[in-house]
Length: 395
Ligand code: PMP
Image 1 (tube, rainbow, N blue to C red):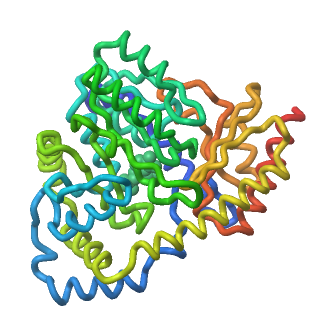
Image 2 (tube, rainbow, N blue to C red):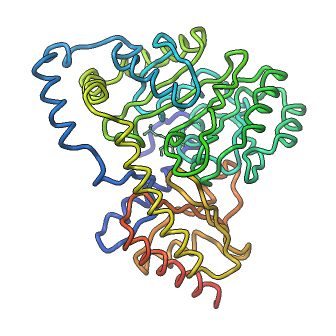
């Protein structure tokens, strides 16, 4: 049977990561595939206590509908997160969303008519590309280097394309590359967006997870005309299961997101918002983030050092100063999708990099996550992966 589906579904494929995650559920597989935080660091006991408190103290309100914009004390708490990345935020500029993923979906819903252009980094976050695709945009991937998007390339594209609606960026510890934009690039991005009157969607789930080096202010910090829409989330600094994130934008822009939210799900879960707000009130999230950083830094070190020891010299990789991912570039003749099959035979998984490029290509790249496996498993998994790479090189 084939029902009469909308044309927009033609372009949408199952997320390769989510498909791969199904295969990696087997206990013998060491998985560097997902972007999953370390489950052993989730504050389960604390959440149990705050959940009970919320039910005791706010029982009926917690089970009731609430405002679309979000639970007021949580919006207040989110202003503190924004302060950490250099933005003096007011609660009225915040909309609580169901993860930042919902903010991505809304961004395309609000800005994109079929055929309009979205500019993104090349590579960029696959989940965003897939969310945007439902609105039938064209993508132009802007080339990147160690310091982020290359501004001369961006300017050239802006000059030659009048249907660009927004520029989508992940400036801190990017998914998938692990790279961070320099301050100069952040400033220049704003200048160009101002000159060409383009919105910027800044997606920042990892900014607070810097384990070394200096914190950079967010792109929003440099925004002079209110054209940056900032997407934040509790997924990586707290836990993804509650599905809570936020949009921070100028009032006029935020109102569009509020309308999108009303049509989509009216509001995010009242009880989840109350639980997280209570947690933030009663516990020290800064201390929790410090702990995450310590553990993730060690895991990154083990992964990078083992790759240095085990990978053939021709294989290159990034050494991120924070976040959850490193990006590997194989020699050009190698295909990471073929390697993924071979690696899975050796019980190690990763995500091939090709799907992070909206217009394809770059099949010799792959993404590795280091937050979800313990140090011993990282060592063993990288050795297995190195074996798979060497096997393929011999063929
Ligand atoms: N943006 C980026 C860059 C991500 O890596 C992720 C999660 N992997 C998300 C958005 C979505 O996160 P969430 O919806 O859990 O906030």
